[in-house]
Length: 260
Image 1: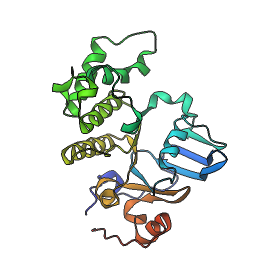
Image 2: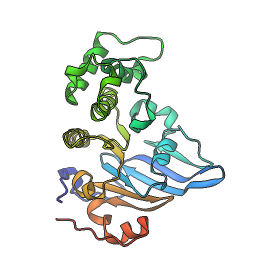
Image 3: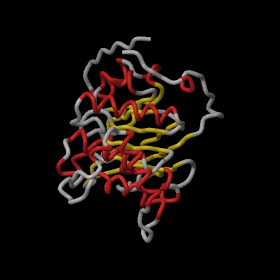
Image 4: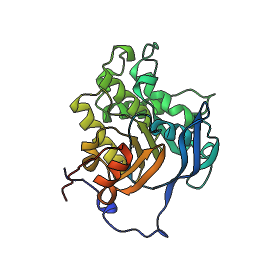
């Protein structure tokens, strides 16, 4: 598969020129005293579309939740553009795993997307016509405008995923974290989602995705982080998505073929 990288990611950037959207220093997270992330150092450059890959239980979702402050680490720190997440929350959008959402909650697709505007409004003000217009535009981008009045419980898995993507888009964030956005979606939805993610990258946004399908990594992403409790490697797909790092991460011999 050929990697469709934009021109800005083909050029060589020196360390001095690199702007890091996210920096993780010495991060350790444990459940019941058992480490699930151990001493993670990670720098995510601004404007990349990055996959986090690793086996089940590797800590991929935990890493995202720790960056977002959902989980509290036992050691280490995280910064968003050089400042703590709580000071930069407005710059970040998050699409959780579909299975972690209560889809039986009685609300419409449009209402869910409009929730994405609450951060900019604050909790006192309620959405008005401007916010509704932004929500409708986001629904159109994900191909769900005709479902705006549908209860979310009546939507298919792929349609639900598109709604949550629209909710993230309406935030107009600088950094997007997505936890397995392709899980349980059909082929057309997957294509629609990756096209939106590539458009975000082209617009200079930083997109971080927990991803399982190793076959599509070279085609979908320009940056990759290998994780298995510890960070195995991180960098441009063309440089580090190889047999050696796959074997170190998954513990079995892997053979990949990446077309230039």
